[in-house]
Length: 147
Image 1: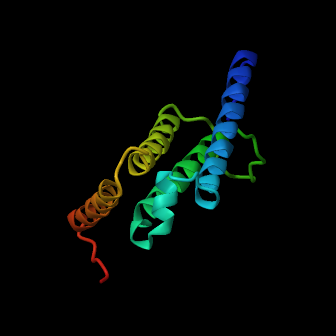
Image 2 (image 1 turned 135 degrees about the vertical axis):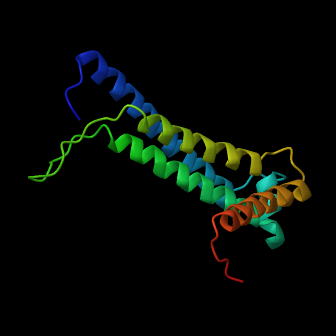
Image 3 (image 1 turned 30 degrees about the horizontal axis):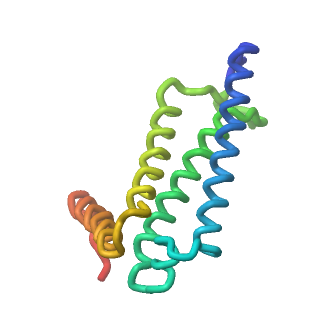
């Protein structure tokens, strides 16, 4: 990844530490929501009714994809052994921004799906909206959909 200046190393270290705390906190919160939802919370309502689980599943998919993007971003800053003949790793100019954008978009979709003020019907509608968009995109790509 080339040499970072001391100032860049400090900023990268602070950023990566913050990112690691955010990823851990997000995972802990989602786990708590699923295993110990607050009485009367949207999560408690969703978990009681199996027909309402779809938005939770879709939100989990987005959150896991976001986590993967954040971990990829972290790995860009970790020096590793380069096998002989392999290209020297460098931090690219644009890819970190697109990785962060994808992670933030996944988080935004999850927040929209799990918005506490949404009614169960709105939440199911949002889950179906995400599914319909996915089917539309697959069809635009000419992919065969299994039934």
